[in-house]
Structures are given as C-alpha cells and as structure tokens.
Image 1 (cartoon, helix red, strand yellow):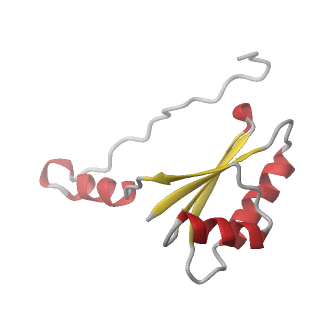
Image 2: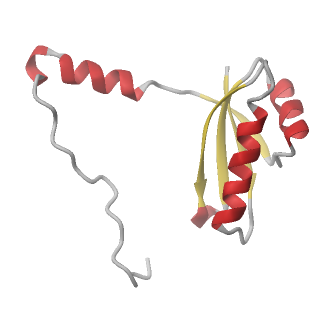
Length: 113
C-alpha cells in the first residue's frame, strides 16, 4: 500500500528540506519499504515523502530508524502518469509529440506573491 509521511519544518531552509528528503530516502533502505520520492513545499513548511510499505506501523518504525521526523502518515493513492502520457502519444490520433507548455510559470524576480 502507498503512504505519505508529512514532515512539518517550521522556518526551514532549502538545506533543511534537502536533509529531510535524504532521510526519507534512507527509510527506503529497509527491505520492506520502497521510497517513491518526496516533495518540499516551502510555503507550507512541509515535506511530503511517498512510500510503499506493508503497513503504517512498518513505515513508522523504518522512519524512526532513519531519523525521519514523522508528523503524520496517511494512506495515498498513486498513478503512473508516465504510462498515461505514453499511451496518449502512441494512440493513432496522437502520433505527433504534443507541444510543451508551462503549467505553473515561474514568477518574475521581485514578485511579492
């Protein structure tokens, strides 16, 4: 089953978030746990780490051994977007590569938002 570990990092820096993500990757060194990736959301002071594990208890124990702070563990649903994109590109009506587009454009320097 897939789970997300939420790690709250008040007043964190990029280096703090990098350290959390490195610890999350070490959780995956446990044979029963598979680390799928992590994302830091600086505006929310939170890092979300995604795993496959046999249970919440097994994941929490592995996280503790790896030194990862666990504020919350929740079941998660995952999807293979890469597989979906490949199917769309290879369907008869979509033989050409779709144009690239920016979904979340970066803000100009100095933009206060």
